[in-house]
Amino acid sequence: MDLGITGRRALVCAASEGLGKACALSLASNGVDVAITGRTPEKLAAAQAEIEAASGRAVITVAGDITTEAGRAAALHACPEPDILINNAGGPPPGDFRDWDRDDWIKALDANMLTPIELIKATVDGMMAREFGRIVNITSAAVKAPIDVLGLSNGARAGLTGFVAGIARKTVAKNVTINGLLPGPFETARLEGTTKATAAKTGKSFDEVYEERKQLNPAKRYGQPHEFGEYCAFICSAQAGFVTGQNLLIDGGAYPGTL
Ligand code: NAP
Image (cartoon, rainbow, N blue to C red; front, side, top):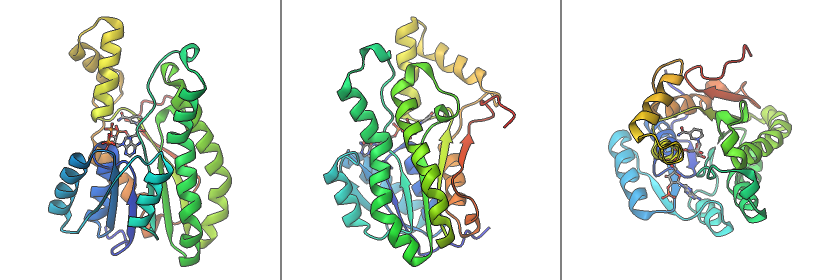
């Protein structure tokens, strides 16, 4: 299927590894010119080489923290008029809400709510003027079914989701869609980190926790980043212009609700 996005420009945030990188790879493989961001230059260079080899398209890299004003300015300088914006950043740490102070909350809000809103603000009017835009916010299955130890994530991402619900209906008449992609458990460095944390907390081995979590999923496996990337590329396709304001789960069926 030709996704109709050859030659489009994408800014893919936090994309030197994991789900962000998978989105960048799928977009580039569908003819999109991608700019990827991340804090660690070595990881960015490795991702750039991998995506360029797989897609045959040049990739721009931007080193910086996307949750800071300077990081966002650098990303927008490298890719000033994106047709596609993938909002992503690391997830907040797990813990007990009694231990979190204002600074912890501000960090989570900056990363998982305010940064995507700032980037939408900086790019959406240009997309509307050009009558094509696809904005995808990588959030979490926790938006639909909160995970108790991830209160910072539950709260910040719910804020973003509420904000987007309001504006996604204002942009679609100009062929600009805004949607959330909600990952369940995907095999990435983040999953390795949360598995290690659970193992340390419960006294179980890493392998035990890893296997238990896998068996809890109806698919009896973890999602693979390329499955996420391909879904994202479709939501960014020319064909997906009638999909907006949605929160799309990709979780192997883990969310148990009928709707
Ligand atoms: P990951 O494997 O840890 O990768 C995160 C990527 O983002 C890395 O390239 C990292 O590179 C970059 N990054 C992190 N913080 C950044 C920042 N402030 N500025 C720029 N780049 C940054 O994570 P993932 O599994 O792909 O997860 C992506 C998002 O989905 C996260 O918000 C996560 O919480 C959420 N999520 C993941 C899962 C899952 O099972 N994997 C499930 C639900 C939700 P540097 O560290 O070098 O910057």
